[in-house]
Length: 255
Picture 1: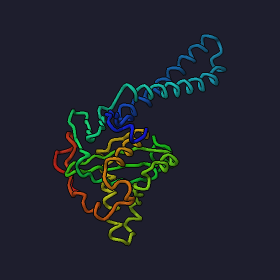
Picture 2: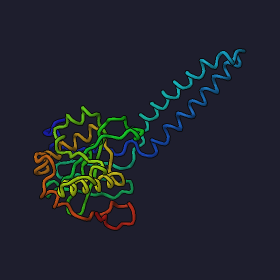
Picture 3: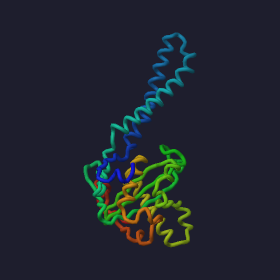
Picture 4: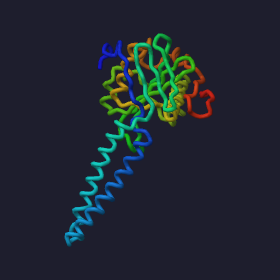
């Protein structure tokens, strides 16, 4: 979808498609399907009078059926069991709707600071394939902050027109050995934003994230043309943000 096609339209984008409920139900269904089909296969083979010989057939068949059931349940759950969070994008701005019904709004006609970063997903992340990229952006307006992110294949991530504006998040060990104060200061800010992503970030599917990036490129002045975050943009980021409604103790987030 091009930027021109977004102008004059309103888009509602579901967030956190792989929420906790989906991640819980898929392995449960996989286990139940495997045990159930294996038990049923044993009953059928026993009735046929040759249970021991049928085990070698029943086991792989039950595993295949359980994997197919998991695949189907995951697709249906993502489609019909939304997380309750959604993002509305239009010509005026973006509105983040939380599960509890609260909303947060950023307006395009007011200044928006953008902090964007990327990193390679480590091997220990189970649901994300090894080597994929995480791309994230924090939109800040006054004391309001929103963080959106996605996981992409490396080639798809590099194909984003704004890929150069996503700073590489340095490992903490490398950050400790860094010499430049500005670099380490920016990296420290990125690591703080990454922690906020873990707590409050909204995950998007790659296509929706690319659409958001396109809209940001058209609406946010100076982004992504500036490439790496500038000194002025870095200094303009506030030291506190309003905590999302329904999250934590309600006190502002101190950086």
